[in-house]
Image (tube, rainbow, N blue to C red):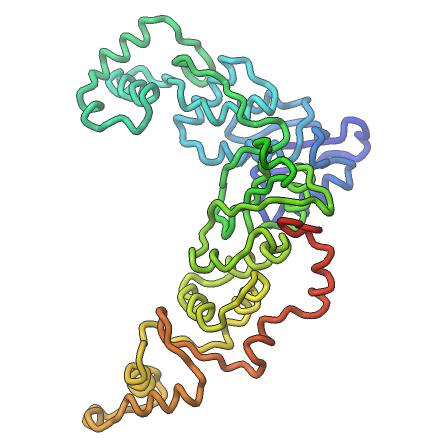
Length: 400
């Protein structure tokens, strides 16, 4: 966690605010609102003056007395949040070695500092040499090669070259590392900090043949997060947008039902939020309900996800006999004498219940709908939402 105290250099009378990075998704809207009341937090400008940086990253104190952008700082913090102790030493030592102060360069550094070697402890040269071998050759180096490495000799050769730079974070050897421009100053490189139901890449349709930059969205996200990401990407109301789904923890069968070129961003985000709220034990039930109801849009699947309690589901049951036996022996509705079990026609009873419930069997098991509306009515969005949809940003002609 990185804690910053920020202020408005132009209007110091607004006082100071404390912001912890990375910002939790549920806190993001309130943080933006707090900064906006201070005249800060523009999606594109570096308008937050850093008065103090606290936390486990002393190298970031070089950002003090400097203006930062909220989302750039949040992205950098997310990148650093994934670093282990060795990567932490490499990042900080490399920032000193290459004299990096600008946020854009610091973000770029998170993608290449792993190529350096930093020695923080000279007491075990065998270990130092092996780590250096991995730094140079990559962690994918064959294990048999690593076993044959003379770590002690490798470390002596490294130290003997005299190319190390002493920093407060260890002695760094850059190994020929080059600071490559990964972040262009506006569009953040793809990096998934936490689980997401959908990972979407948005590009301007007019720029598809020009290798245009991509705006990455991780759904579900707060409306404030989405609004700022779209503004940062240069997407205005009425923009024509090409949308691609590149990942997420959604089942392929469900993803295949989404037309990302036609769905509205609001519908996709609401759908992702509904899926994220489903208990893991309910995923099989949701898949069974999807197969039963055959929804054709994100909004229809959202309605189903929000109304799973209107469906009965018995996993692993695929025949009237199995369903009848489940009801009589396992559901708890009957107190069965085992001596009577051989005389019960489970299949007939199961079929009777299926006919009464209107249930079906599918790959997941048995599912039945017990709502008072028809399934098509259940999946239909309220009229107010349908009217509002015309003002939403929609992919492919993604109108907002």
